[in-house]
Length: 162
Image (tube, rainbow, N blue to C red; front, side):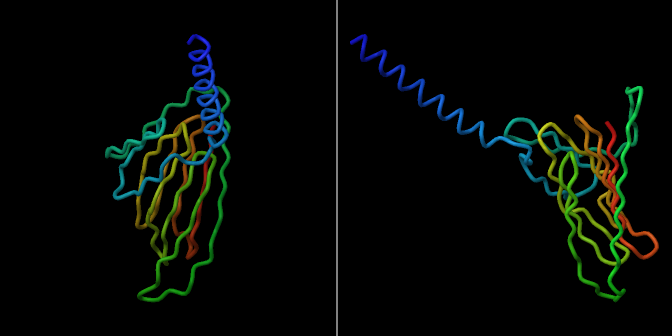
């Protein structure tokens, strides 16, 4: 009877080890959840396998405790299609070190479609459009993504601070 119990315990332990090992090999830096932005002022905290969305008023307060701030700004311009009265919306996906932002745009307008933070990051929608989109991620890095029209061109800026 004792040998049977030891065998069952060993088999159960082996099955549990294989399950944890298989799950661990699938864990990565992909987003845990995609959050669709219904309005500006959404903040999302991603923890474990769930995410929580709450609405808050946008704020612009920040505290930098680092002694040597590092800032990287990336700017990309997209040539605007000819202006028409009923221009179709197009989509752009912006990837950053903190997550992904999807925006729709047409001449003179940009609007936020969705935000997908990476594990360990939260986000704050500063502006959901039109006329501009601004999303700030907070976590190991502070990353701000800004999409707006400037001189007839769609400009995408990614600012990463450590």
